[in-house]
Image (tube, rainbow, N blue to C red):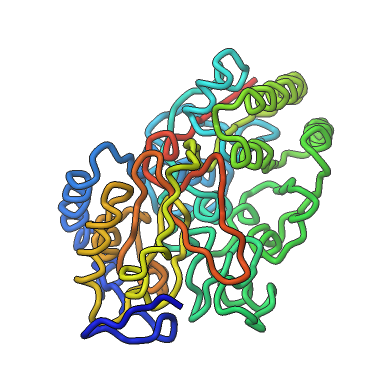
Length: 436
């Protein structure tokens, strides 16, 4: 182990709980928007000035959260308490017999324009929205399924701190410590707290999910009492959904498609194979619209996030900088484009100084409290563990860069395409609408 002892810092590498960042969102009175809004404006202004060119989420009418507020209103669900979409393209959508929400994982606005400019999907794009922060499946899909921002549902990365363990919230495994006895259902019971949204719509809701995750603890919680329907592949998914549109009973249908995301992680977001896969999905989409036209079905298609290329020479191994890594109380969590750092007590100032000196070419080094105060995770009241999960410092990768550490027993992660940062290509998602 390459830890180095530094005066004023705890000596061991992983044993202690990091000091919590405290911010306005989890302070007493944080539920009062009038109390926190001026501070949020100032903090966001400062953040934008430090992170040149970054794209931050819109929670005021132009984002994924606002889409879910509007859909909930239109479909007889609860008022979630957030501004509706600024655009009126979904006004009255609840009058249609069927309403379909297709979530095409990873198909950001930039990818749709570049890979399929003449596709039906792109030609029916009515607006460009922002995802949430971080723009990644864990945070964004949970916002879709609960109608709550990451600040409230508390799922903020592929890996995140839960209690004293670093876990993966979707597949529900423990990354650290090794040999943890925590089982997936046990983790789910203590991790998932935001109630599911779709079961509260005034019409039956059906969730169509890949068969290997359809009955997982994560899917069971976020579907609630709504029916979950497994599918084998995208062709099977569209066949099933098309058949359901012929029912005379009004319904809401949610279809989650992950094929684009899987492929772009493997080959990158600009490969010709991604364009071919998009063309196949677009053909399925066109056939779905034929059935929708016959059956008074509205179809909305969105993404959870976009993508950026991840050049192999721009992966930075934080654990290979021992004077910096030894200041951490536990491994990195979050994502390779956005990492949460839990720093040993008394070491934060030194960590920020060293990180900016050694990593500043590759990432912005931001105190977690600044991000919380700026409201990048969305409006509160915040999840009680949000500040603890964010740690003390957040490393936000600059264009082209990825950050990683590798624990014993892990293979070094290398992907051709990534997301979860603040490049516009990661943050911007399309709003695609068909109404008969």
